[in-house]
Length: 192
Image 1 (cartoon, rainbow, N blue to C red):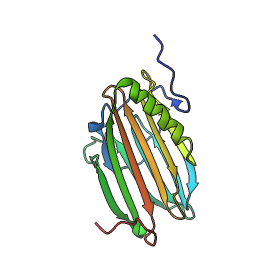
Image 2 (cartoon, helix red, strand yellow; image 1 turned 90 degrees about the vertical axis):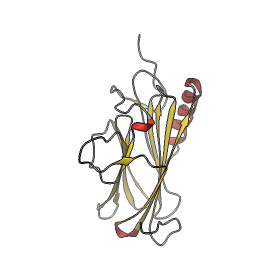
Image 3 (cartoon, one colour; image 1 turned 45 degrees about the vertical axis):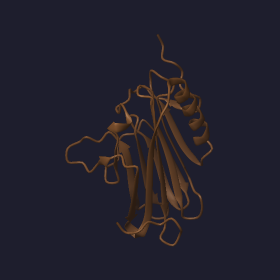
């Protein structure tokens, strides 16, 4: 029996999930770049941004647009590698990055029935496509098995991205939201 068609706007990848549920996810700002199944690159608000879909996970790499200097790589994935810096997925985190760049991260887990999850994922993909930079990938077996990322800017020097990881087998939708802002703009974080 063929797999159901992916949702419109999502790139179909022929790779199974490597994460199986929300509780398997970890968060890191120190993890090296990983191979991407789908990606998009953009220049937004003075930053070079690369949105990467991993196996039902994501990385967002951010560099200064002018110099190309790497600022951060946010990874939300199953990171059980010994010796790697990874933490369980937090509900929120704040960091001050080099150059006193403020970083704010939030995550939530929603639980849905099969039909509601499929509808929610379809709406999220449509919303993601409205951003200056977005990428969505659907995985084999279920049209709601999707990872999507979207980035934009709420104002000069500010960068914002949202990601969604759906796990139809457990009825979960993980949403993360990240904001970067320079020290002279509201929303900056304090030193940890």
